[in-house]
Length: 428
Image 1 (cartoon, rainbow, N blue to C red):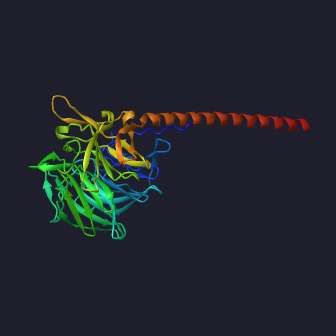
Image 2: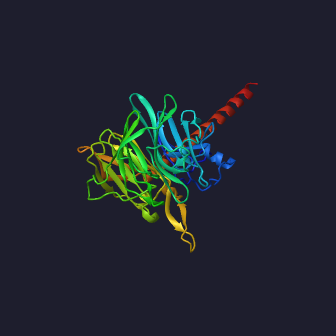
Image 3: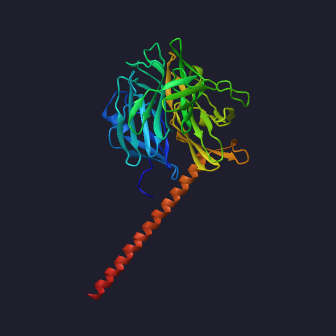
């Protein structure tokens, strides 16, 4: 057997896990051994590493990066464009320390570049959203929402709701031009989302997206919401539309939630479908369900629950990524997160509990399309972890056999060398 050890992925929460090529990329996020300080050698060591999950080998690996990584390591906004992963804003991990720098990780060179430093004139925040969009032949990053410190400059078209703890919640929106590196503050129209954090945001097509759930304010206190919005982005205007009350199917409307994860399934055989897993309901209750929203491009939304075990759905602050494996098959990759709160002593103080069970840390769900209707078939869901274990065992057996074969070849080479030496001695 090879002496090379197998890298083991550990706990993680409040992170993103985008896919580029055949791998999933995970940077930073909350973890047990993360120092709760602004900056330190240990913190830099952790944030200078990017972990990847290869779909071909079904294994995690760790990679050192070059350059200076961001300090907004939790609740950052993340999106991809070509081979680059963009990271915006985020919480530092201590106090009310938020950031608003924009950084990019080049996955080909594994190097960091800061595109825009922290800026006191813009709101420093975390737990917002960001997408890469394209319109009028130009590529943009679109940022929206989040919670953080009250900004020095407030834009009149947006709201900044104050919490009792001194932080502010916002629906502030920005566009970043990837060609000229300039931020612009767009105008808004329609039914704009209220100040929100902890929501999910996903791209439907080149200039259209969907926003679901999150935390809003109620008399200076936190409350979760079940708002769903569709937005369209043009050159300098974001048009919003609330779709609350227009979803059909099974007579249900999604419950309030935050800390959930969602992904868009864009297969060749189906129209864009939104899948939502987990999150928290009121009073820190886990949302142990999986929802599928279909027909999101037509306005005739339908929603249905998909039966999955709580080992999959019973989590929050996790990541969810949809990966198209074939024209009729999609993998949903779920990574990390936290499970139910544990209560400390007699005082009702919730303690965050990370998912550390290796059987739950990385889970893959296989979705199969019904060919006739071009719909996602919720009855054909397969939890792939057992299959992955079989693949890993097969790969391990092959590796061990190859090592044994190599050892035999080496023995034969030594034996042949000894015979040749004996022949040389006999001729001397």
